[in-house]
Image (cartoon, rainbow, N blue to C red; front, side, top):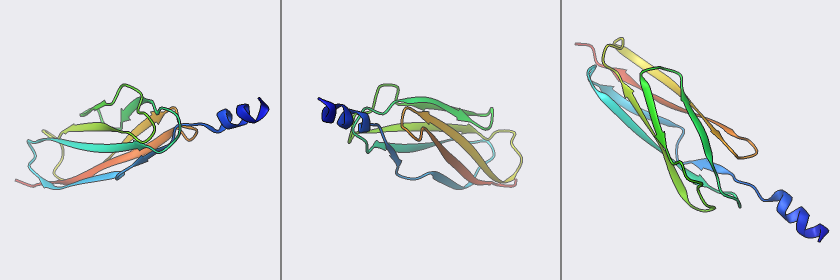
Length: 116
């Protein structure tokens, strides 16, 4: 019974993103752009994405709401409305909160808004 409790104590969700940065390259200043980040549960328990927070109010997100089973993948979809944003390079951060032992991840979108 004690050894079983030790096994259960080490069971946990873990995550791995296919990439942590999406580069849009050069984009038009009136575009609505979307990046999809794929996350895999590399742990032994279901992974739950609790919250996704963007560093900019012009960014919206949608993500897998149901628990991601071990070995399965989920996604985080980030949409950035660049209309009215300054021309030139940009880099925006997105924070992801999960139920994993190291619960936080940081994702980025970047690119260059073309000058007229």
